[in-house]
Length: 98
Image (tube, rainbow, N blue to C red; front, side, top):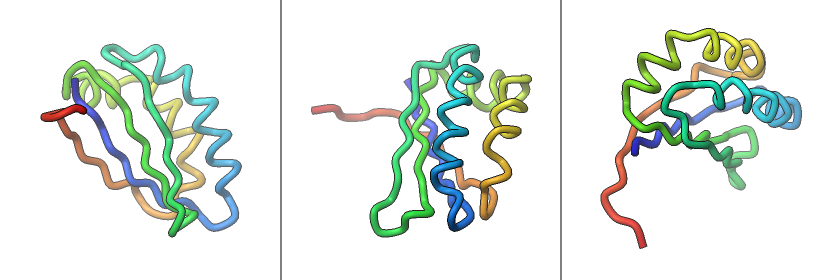
């Protein structure tokens, strides 16, 4: 299982609209090959900063299948207007769980 971690800074004052747009985008993710769920986390210290944690079966399910699909276009169409800067994205794999 791969976790995509996207750090997303949104424009000040757009936090609630961004959160609502992510909720709407749930369907676009749900149709994606290899998708296993996501969580949206909001920073306490920096309220315009979010981390979107998306579970994928493989790295390629995100980087190839999702990014090359209409689902990605739908996702960006819903949330892109709220970005203060392009998201920073990295991928991790679980090495320890308690």
